[in-house]
Length: 526
Image 1 (cartoon, rainbow, N blue to C red):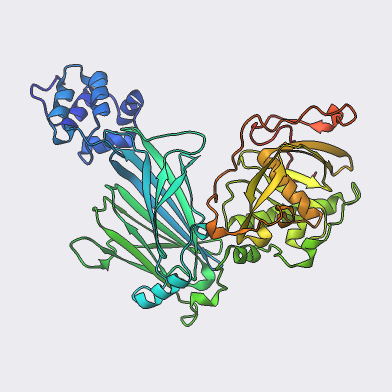
Image 2 (spheres, rainbow, N blue to C red):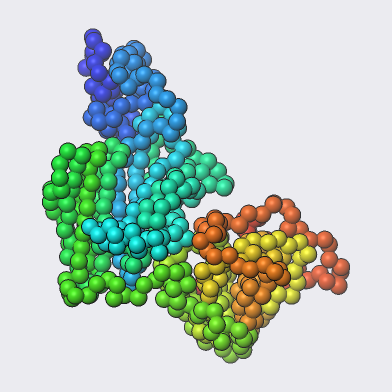
């Protein structure tokens, strides 16, 4: 090959020079720091190249000015207004699972910035309609029982990094939210030519979700796929339609595939290169019993309903108001191990209903077991679970702060609770020996909450006089970590008589804002 005597359009020139240099799309992408799919889209002419991409391509491939002139002569070379850039979607995948009266939606997007400005946010939409085709029934339902952010339990990540979000529209049955490419620790804007995997999820009860699921194409998209997962016992049947800005609803042009796996029926569907404005709607019914409506399942209307369904004892039950029985260790080590296993199974059930951005804990009395055992999952998802047997707080700092807490045993409210920022907890190991562990800040709050449960105390007993819990709908900290001023959790030097032998205090590497010196423990006791 020899250089083209006349500048071609940019996609053609790019392919020409890439082949001339004997580079694959993957090799060129690695050399330029771009995603290979972006190069494929540019060469196919599906999406315009960014200015940064064109300059790098000229440097890496041509050095004659041909690529740069080709890009400058294209209509897209004109400067674009500053803002959120221009996104296109390489892959749009949605999963919807139904389980015991609750729908959980998982959305995955592989997005690429094809514009000239950094992208700083992504718009997500959530819309429900319990009675499609009967607006008067739906309007009445959502007036009386509006869709709430708390119940949706929206979470989002970008390449695994948590994303903050801000509501754009908050209506009874419709939400719009900006997912921001940032969190409290950092910013990670999507720069021109870069790609990222966005994932977000939310939950809606069957009392608010109708038997349909729709995908609307609002950005240039290469591929769309949907997966529906239903219990096989319901004998579900699924069908679908598609509409566009110029055509009425018609059957889906590609088939819905069906398979069974571990008690579930899984329906999957996909299409390539959907047009902007297209809407793909999947609907279903339970064929096992046509007269059985999903309202026959218990409606999980409140957060406490969901915790009760997960097997968590609720406020008013006597076991929550009395001290738990301590284990005799090591004689009862096997019994303690069985209780810990029960706690971990219960945690998994609870997580089906709620995401815990602040970490979480669970005490044995909350699952109806009258023994002094608790587990705590730290805010850092990579940190080990904390196991507590027969725990007692033996010392705490005078440095306190007040944060809102939730309790699985009355999850419809949140309460402002003052607690010490540093505590020392004596607890027993399965072999019968005792140890003392130091916890600070968020982990200190979580541990203190669970130790209270084992002594028949709830956070309501710790609230300041005259302060009452607030409805969860009024709480604005869902899914966010507690914040602390760094370096202020230190306590004044203790008197020598108060100091603990250093050999009894367990210490291990850990994030300074979570804990100082807590000992990671395995799930099993042995």
